[in-house]
Image (cartoon, rainbow, N blue to C red; front, side, top):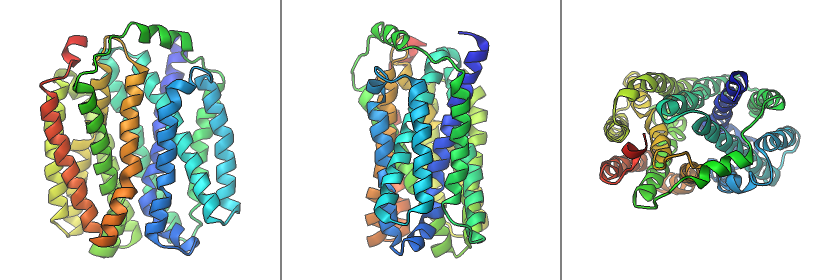
Amino acid sequence: MKKNNKIKLTIISFLSYYFTGSTITITGIMIRSIAEYFHTSIINISNIFTFFNSGMLCAILFNSWITNFITFKKQIIIGFILIILSITNLIYVNNLTIFSINIFTLGIISGTIISIGTFLITSIYTSKTRTSKLLITDSFFSMSGILFPIVASNLLSKHIPWYSIYIIIGIIYFIIFCLTINTKFPTIQDKLKNNNHNNIQWNINIPILCCLALFYILGQLGFISWIPEYATQTIGVNIQRAGKLVSYFWMSYMLGMWFFSYILKSFDLQKSLLYLTGLSTICMYTFIINQKIKILNIIISILGFVSSAIYTIIITLTSLQTKKTSQKLINLILISGTTGTLLTFLITSPIVHKIGIIGALITSNILYLITFILSWILGFVSQHKKNI
């Protein structure tokens, strides 16, 4: 593969995470404004955003099969057409049903592009550099988590319509589209050839890794999605300070990824996963039992930093369960993680309705504890050391 083409594929992968991150991290900030726009409850809108998560899940679930008929390049081009239609409808059509359809479509686009981006990184880089490249790629998700909550909260505080943020997000996909036009993607035959040499051992290690991805993402998004409402309603800060609280998390998350992209080369991935999930569980518990905003800023920053490498380590460990990267296994982990995203509001909304926002945060903390226990069990069954 030519160096210039490899660089463009890498940039597309980076931007795929940046785009998907921007569509996910703004939900908690915008949910109240969208509810007021459609004259409905926050719980109803949070349930509607489940359509976004459903779209992501469907896209990732069928992506490896669709790739047999539609190339990566064509998928991105089709996605560009769909995002133009979706954003146009968000701006001009004031209807809750149409809004739900557009949100579902944005979920499909996000699921498709992040699936493509993840596979590109795991296929064009060797196991020695794969972890660091995946961490850097995932850090672009965090970059969007830093920028977009601040941008969204500032726009909303100035009474600028909520859908304007989706126009900005659309520009990111436009850049991906422009890069795609003159880039050569891996062929279907190359992927099939690589997969044919894999000997996938469906031991308990694969289900454990899937559960790790599901519980971690569900715990993370269940926590961070309700932080803006928790900060404004329980702690009593304004929407801008609540947005900054979310941004502190993602900024630390990004810095943590850059830090761990160099550090993890010298450590066993499974043991690193165990320590990081344990520290993250403690940090989240500490956040929940405090209510002083200055202390919460510090705690959520530490939480973002120590939890930053968890999902990427899970993906890397999955890719190392076979001699060569299996797109099916990578997609399986992405499906598990996206299922966690799908379940975020389905599980937390009823909890918030009956117990309050603090109930959702406690549930997330319990899920982090489960990931810590699973990480310990994984140490007995993982095959990653044999395939490095």
